[in-house]
Each structure stands twice: as structure tokens, then as C-alpha cells.
Length: 281
Ligand code: NDP
Image (cartoon, rainbow, N blue to C red; front, side, top):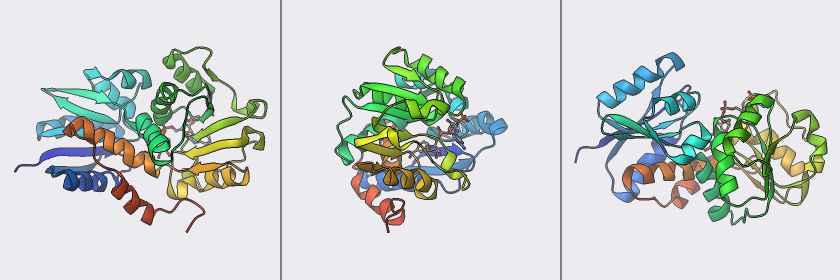
């Protein structure tokens, strides 16, 4: 059987787990696929994507810094991708790309199915307004959270995110400097890339936390250390990193391409064995 071509585009991309995750899903489901990582500089992304399609590429994942460029390369989009303004999943339809974003649904699946959390009614703080925050925000609103407060270092990006949600009143922005006046939240999500900078710290106000708070970092491994350490010291009831989201967003992409959603527990367990939750051995 000839394997269809899939790839993940990003820069840097060498440490991406996606080829491994999709290979494991393919073995599990008996689906032959060839999935590789393609390192593309921003000014070469469009040409690299075109070359991939010309060589038989039928599906792709997109990671930083190409999610907006990939959005622009799509002829058709899912409604959640249109709302996010960014895509992480491309599907070839004839000679066009169809775009979707699975980060948000991946996070929600991880929190609800794997961690057994009920998101309904939760007052939620989303820190960050980049590509992943834009995918996560509509998925959280759709999952029934009570209110979404978005805080971002660059406030204009938070405003743009909220404008795209189209839920005035239920989804609002606040300035980072005003974090002390926001009250407390049942769900706090770090969707920034600040943890990749070893000098960054997360001295967020302790008053953000109540006895029910779940803190979630979209990052995992070293990049999640600072936020997870803050969440623990603040007394959060549950602390979750982004490893489960990584596996679940991949499963949602796999579903788009192969019309079957793979079981994720075995792949998650294997990765968790190699990437302990920050602060745990
Ligand atoms: P983007 O580059 O699109 O956005 C980065 C965000 O981080 C912006 O909101 C930016 O603020 C903020 N930021 C960066 N540095 C700092 C800092 N020092 N202090 C405060 N805020 C900062 O990235 P993505 O949204 O795509 O990804 C965000 C993180 O989530 C990444 O680390 C990524 O690895 C992770 N991720 C995990 C996934 C998973 O499956 N687990 C999936 C997708 C992403 P500003 O607007 O002011 O620049």
C-alpha cells in the first residue's frame, strides 16, 4: 500500500513530537502514512507548502510561527478556524487547502475526558492572545464556561481576540497591570510562550485562585516549570500541563484526515513517561 504524505511545518521543528504521535496513531489504526517534519522559514513557508502539495502532500499540521500564514493559504475553513484566525491542520481538497484548528477542542477533550473536569459555569482567565489562545477561547466558550477574561502583555491582541469571539459581555479583556483587581477564577490558563524564556517568572497575584481553581499550562516540560510552580504555590486544586492537549489536538487532526479518531491513552502514557508534570518525578 502506498502511504499518503503528511507533515508538520514549523520553525524550529526538530523536537516536534507530532511525527511520532501520528506514526503511533497510524500503527494503532492500521493506516499507512508517511508523516515528516518540515523546517520552513517564514518567508519560505508558502513555497514549502506548495512544494509539499506538488509532491503528493494531502495533510499538514502547522505550528509556530506559521499558523496565520497557513490560515491565509486556505481556500475554505471550518467555522472554528475562521473564529480563531489561525489554523493548525490542513487538508488537501482537490487543488486547494481546507483549514481547521484543533488546539482548542484538543484542550477541552483533555480537561473533560482525561482529567474529568466539568468546565461549565467556570469563571475563566486566559493569559495570552497568540495563535493557541485564539483557538482555545472559542472552544472554552462552546464548552459552557461562565465568563472569559483575557489578559495579554500586548493588550491590542487581547482586544482583537475578543472581537473575533463575538460574545460581548461574556468574553472581555483586562489589562495585565490590573490583574490584582480581577477577583478569583475556577479556571486559569497560561497560553503564553513566556516559559520558553528561562528568565521569565510567573508571579501572578494569589488572589486569582480559589478553592476550586484548576490551573492549566499549554506548555509542558521545562517551559511549564514556572507557571506550574506558581499554580502549586498558590494552592490550585488541579494543575494540568499541555501534554494531553498535544496528544488530543493530534487525534483531532488524525480524525480530519482519516475519518477515525484514534485512542489516545497509550500514546499519552508513553509521552508522560518521558515528560513528567513539572515538579513531579
Ligand atoms: P504565539 O507566539 O502565537 O503567542 C505567544 C503568546 O505569549 C502571546 O500572547 C505573547 O504576548 C505571549 N508572551 C510571550 N512572551 C511573553 C512574556 N515574556 N510575558 C508575557 N507574555 C508573553 O504562540 P502560541 O499561541 O502558538 O503558543 C503559546 C504557547 O503554547 C507556546 O509556548 C506553545 O508551545 C504552546 N502550545 C502548546 C500546544 C499543545 O498542544 N500543548 C499547542 C499550541 C501551543 P504578546 O502578544 O504580548 O507578544
